[in-house]
Length: 288
Image (cartoon, rainbow, N blue to C red):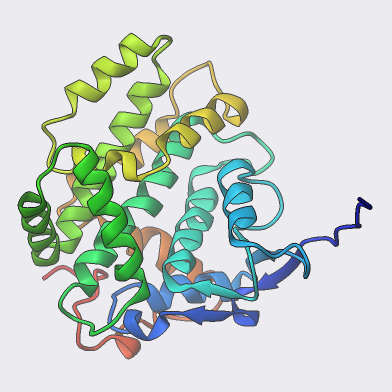
């Protein structure tokens, strides 16, 4: 069987991609600003070449080859709206938490950035539940979360109760899940043996969102940090200060919006566009 040559990954900015499910996100506070940050900074995504474009290949590349040049690998010239937000949070975290871009990020910086980007999913779930008639994000993410919760022993009724609580307080849910993801991954990273890691998981099993932990690719976070993060030396004081501020603030997304998102837009010479795109939903830029 003859082998065939494979073309290079094609770089595309968010403005050059079609965005799936964007209509469902129009009322979501921060979505417009996060997308605009990527557009203004000309952040690039990588698209698989024709003949090699398969969803399973894109998934493997995304889970295995983080970092480097370019963002998420896509199987075609389209991107889901939630992936836009995930990429934007990583981009903002890399800018805010890396004092010198050529240096390897600290373990704390990696876990804080990932905890913010991943916990934003629960915020999106809370914002979209009951507020949109159809959303491919909800149609894929909620069943995936339900599967993880069921494997963790959470009943269907308890999971539905959890979703109702998330819908009632999306930002509070984000705050709790973000802190949990940061704490668990940092504790697991410090473990040398499986017994210690098991003790960490048991220690957090009573947390409200513990049943969703395995929905996230925590093993990938930890393995990536072991391979590529800056280890040793003193703790990253800057990252720890940001993490404490987020934990202390009752509206951590408002904190991030004012200290990460707004400055990024100001550097590009534009103001916040959340209010103009989402007058029906309270934007987390201001306190109620």
